[in-house]
Length: 365
Image 1 (cartoon, rainbow, N blue to C red):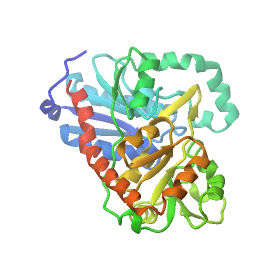
Image 2 (tube, one colour; image 1 turned 45 degrees about the vertical axis):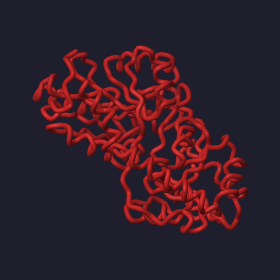
Image 3 (spheres, rainbow, N blue to C red; image 1 turned 90 degrees about the vertical axis):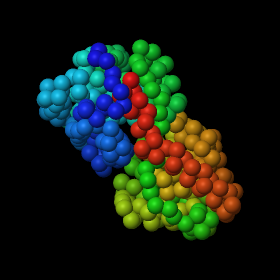
């Protein structure tokens, strides 16, 4: 493999960045801040965007491979670094990342410990559950071996300590670097003690995000406390007394949502993907910390590590435990404001221009 370069010499290099489109899921939204933080270190950045899990076709993979090949040919292997955002079912970066040891390649795993889990999830396969299982089940025992081989020349970043440990344990021959999910910059809001008596849930609606426990949480949380929900897909949730559903929010609407809740609930369960349990980082929790909003979460996966920041409370994964903590603390303005101040510190320490340092050090190694 070519020798790695000094940090200052990265400005003579081109970064080929492969990531989902914004709005296609957590990794796509994460990519926006990441690439902007990386851009100042490189002479040029070439972005290759794709549809995301279940939306990428074989043609999309071939197109991305051709684009990467053209950029590497134009700038040379010694002046090019390729980085991809990998998550469950993300076909384009998994199949398009070069495996040539002369090309410097890195990737971020959003659903550790494995990079893609479902490497054949094209739209045709994902269209029906039966078709998906028919394709995935017979080959699942070999998928891990495939992932191991394709990533053996790639430096792999994982956005939590527990996720990096699980990846290293499963793939001991990989180079795994533990880092953190960045907290995006946001404007300040009133302290939680001055916000309405409400808690929130935020994010994409899919299994494992805790929306299936909403009914039980509504029964257990003090009826004087409103539950406000926002995010893509939430508008399809059934109406419920004491629950306000806002649907997708962006920009000023997102500011208004977080300014209207005293804490964010993250009752995430252990996320099961085809072939085992994933340890995803929570972009939703990072967004809450960006707005200096305390988080109350189940002690599952990467969310369990949030307690160390002082900005989050984690409880054993049962709605009774989460509701009990909400009822005991929602009116404790001093506690919530102290957690908000801890979130401010975390927002500074985990700002994109600081977290990117972990990547720059590896790119410059």
